[in-house]
Image 1: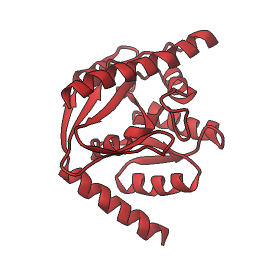
Image 2: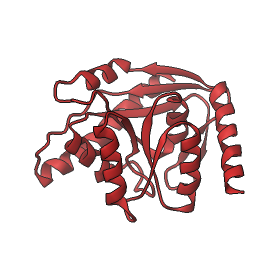
Image 3: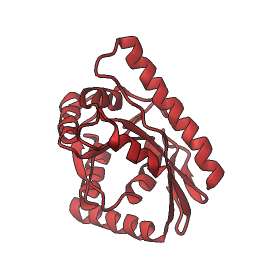
Image 4: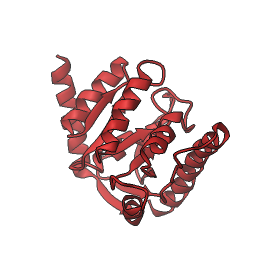
Length: 214
């Protein structure tokens, strides 16, 4: 039954995706990230908010990404759908099996696969970057690409912790890539915290720019 429900959810999302009109902005930043002299694997790590998950997933179909899904029941559904979309799903969270899941993602990144991380997932606080994305970027020497989704028509789940956003059918969606963030391999705890704040600021800056275009 779970597989059937996951398949139905996948079909619904694919139908929505076919109706969306995506406009990609900042793709030159992906080229910068891949061609950085310290980036030996020519890939990048996308950092986005949990609330933008639907738009982020549907705008990158056909591209190989490694994503993390929590060990919760919702995470189980998410992992099944993620796999049906052609992505690699790693199960884990900040509270359960976080270290092991992070290492799996790191191994995938070191092999040249791009990764995508909802920096405030799976339970928040909303729009506050957690350690995972900076830790993986630091250990892999792979740049972080801040990503935001802006839709001209969307439904907001106001009672959810993240104010989850579902673009409505036939929406115009801006997929905005901000400038790469490079994390040195050796940094202090204070510098690590500052990079977390830098990711937060970059996403807020990208959102402001993207909303002008939507």
